[in-house]
Image (cartoon, rainbow, N blue to C red; front, top):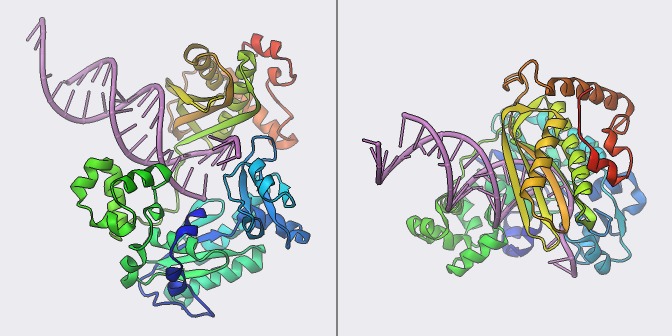
Length: 424
DNA sequence: TCTGGGGTCCTGAGCCGG
DNA sequence: TCTGCCGGCTCAGGACCC
């Protein structure tokens, strides 16, 4: 987490746990656990000979970016989200590995199981981090929140062979900040009574939701630290940056964050996108890619028992301008051919010609398959759904390449141009 | 340096119906 | 019948997070 790099050193030293000793953790029921350089750490666990070399995990193609870098690689300035080509110039001797998401998912499941063994109130944010509310577990375990943090750190290392950092605080936001500040392999406790003392010296970029653009806007208003945001009258802040953002940032800056840990969260959209190695202007190739992405997206819907109503496509041109176009269907669907039909229509009718760098498909307005409005019985899509469900089953038994749309079997763009799906 | 891929949330414009 | 207002919905774009 790059945000911690700019934070005042004194704070880190004051609140960091050291030699089994940490500040007063009374009332600190929120834990944020963040795995250290997760993908890189998993790769090193699999190949211990990489332990003492810089390791970078990310897209290894010409347009890839860094997903994760171990701390040895970071010493050379390598950061996540940096183009891999740039990383190679900074650390030419590092080991560069393509990501293995299945492996990281498996380790993540093991880590989350450890968390759930401690408390049922676990809210995963991604593969490598989660919030835990340990308020109900204190008595059962006979530990304070800091003790639970240390228990988690030792169990994750012993069971999964990777290290993590833990933030302990009275709110989610403070716990998350704390875990970022004690990385790697550390723990930090922010006493409830010291929340503002901890928070106010931080730069505005430490606030959740403040990226480069918003930080620049705030700085233009003379707001450089979290204390500056908390000191500005809320009505003025609302006028300057909009109601929702102002209220969100003002609350965080004032130490107010009453969000609870929510163990179950439903997805709101599912999609897939792809950046081409070389820009593509050929419409037939673009449609073919849309079919592939429609298959991936709708396949995820079916696997999760979901339907979606709005199909949107995203097109990024060579100059990096990006447009999205969407259409809402009268009834929700999980049928690849239906998603593809809308996506291709949007491409044909609403996207101007040009060199395309990235194309994507996303399905929004999700609903459970059983509660979603069903397609009418005689609709032509019904035949497609049955065919696709059979194909899904074949893929789960024989692998992802076992069954694919005919137009994806060959590299011939001419075929794609002629592709007009018809149910058997 | 030259910018991935998976998402979420917010804002504002336009349209429509009450 | 016309007009204004308001709320809900859809769509597009932008910012942000990991």
